[in-house]
Every structure is written in structure tokens, then in C-alpha cells.
Length: 239
Image (cartoon, rainbow, N blue to C red; front, side, top):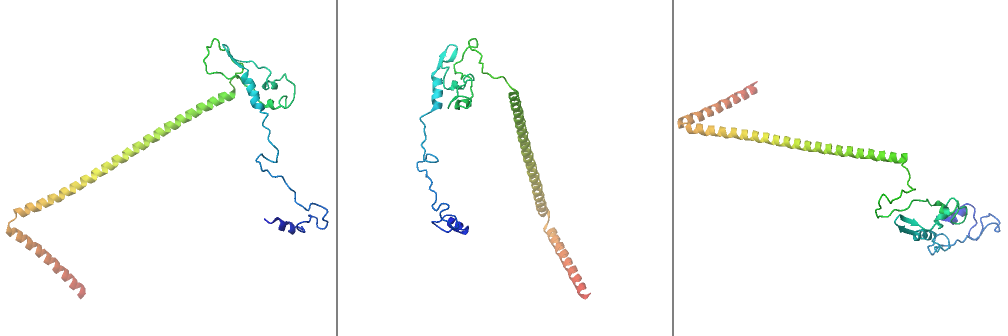
């Protein structure tokens, strides 16, 4: 895009002049210079300060105050940085007070260890929350999901059985058709063999005179047939 051409189309007089049509003292004749980010530290040239790692310091302070005993884990630090968000503390500052940074943290219960403790010595936690209607609804939804998954499994099993039955039925039908075709071919072949055997037996039983008479009879039939065809052709030509 040619910015100079666009500005000239709007009435700009050219390089070295302001946007005013006649007076060069009104407006800026030189472009504004902006600072460039060359160090990769974000917008502008301001340095990032990471020396105040308040989140690590606050949690380290609490972790150092943990002590283990027969009754469980005990916290010895009572006035740490994370305790500054207590309701009875009315001070306000960078990290404390109603609008402080620590006010956004949610106080939770103690983390339990992996060592099993007898039920007689284990004390009930005061941070336990009673079951709400949302939990009951969640359990109901989980039950419904389990029932749905069971129904889906049953449907898949039924579909699998149906496909298996269809394959078996198709296989049986193909075997039956093949057996039927084989029987038909065998029957046809047996008929041919029987005819051949009959002819051979008749030829073996006939005498020479009978064979000659049968051949003469066949020749006479062929001759009579040919004669009839010639007569029919002559009649059509005469008509």
C-alpha cells in the first residue's frame, strides 16, 4: 500500500509538509518516532523485576512451619504471609487487606500423609464439607452413564451375535446350493453314462444285418425329408 499516494489524494502537499492545506506551522511535518523492542522483554524498554518472588516465599514459610507428631501434622507458623488474609486482620497493603494480592487465595484443609493412622487416634477434620445436592446429582449422572454404557455393551453384543448368525446362515445356504448343484451335475453325468452304456450294449447285441437295416432306415428317412423340402420349395416358386 502506498501511504503517500493515499495522503496526496486527500489533499496532502507532500513530504516535509503538514496535513494542513496552506499553513505549514499547523500540525506535524515529521513522523512520530516510536521505541522499538530489541531485547525481547515485552512492550517498551522496561526491565522485568523477578527478585520479589512473593509466591515462593509465602509457601516456603508455611512449609518450614510444618511439624509431625503422633497426632498428625501441626502448623507452627501462625502469622505468616498467607495468614494475612484472615478476617480479623484489617490492615491493607500490597499483599494484605480486602483488595490485597493474598485475598484471591482460597483457604483449604491440611494435606494428609501416606502413613495410615488408627481410627481411634485420628481426629475428624473440620474442613470437610457436607455432601450437597450437586454431589448427589453428580452421582446420579454417573449412575446413568454407567447404565448407558451397560446398555451400549448389550446392544453391541446383540449386534455381534446377529452378524454371526447371518454369516452362518449365508454359509449354510451357500453349502446347500453347492451340494444341490453337485447332485444335479452328478445326475446329469450319470444319465449320459447310462445312454452311452445303452448304445454300447445295443450295438454289441445287434447283428450285422440288423445294423445295416437300421442304417438303411436312417438314410431313407433323410432322403424322404430332403424330397419333401424340395417339393415345398417348388410349390412356393410355382405359386
